[in-house]
Length: 209
Image (cartoon, rainbow, N blue to C red):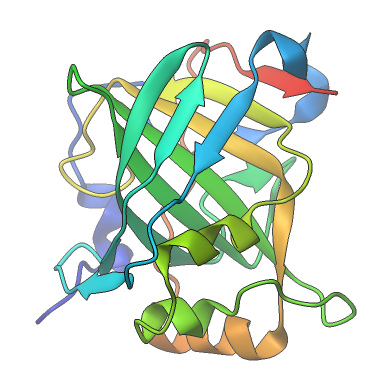
């Protein structure tokens, strides 16, 4: 199968001017305390994560729930980006994992987990365990940082058709990965990140302790 060509991303067409990803400068966000918007995630199943090959990037099927501001979303799929799509004050991290959710009304939410190489810290779950379908769904909780501080904003999906009206939740504490995980990520999904898009007046809210 021929995958989506990110070298052609400037030709991708969108019906919205509120697109994703964006650059995040925490000093320019609206700050709120985390207890006002707690984030709860569950990955309860002991079934294997299943890989589904698609033109816009391999998707990994799993289930779980995300509850935010009393709204519950069901996990649909997970996918990976070599080089983070969201940047932090202009800095691109080593990778980004997207957990794509949907609520009962069909509204989309994406939880973004940034990844950073750090061989001095133990990797809680090696990414290639997921690629090789050698991980159970309940092990996905190992990817999450202890600190669930996050930013939220309204944007789009980052691959065509660039579906609009997506709620984004970007965790600000990264998942630390090994050099070997970064190499595997790059080998399997080389440079599959979209460039950041203009904010166009959107508010970015930072929920932190």
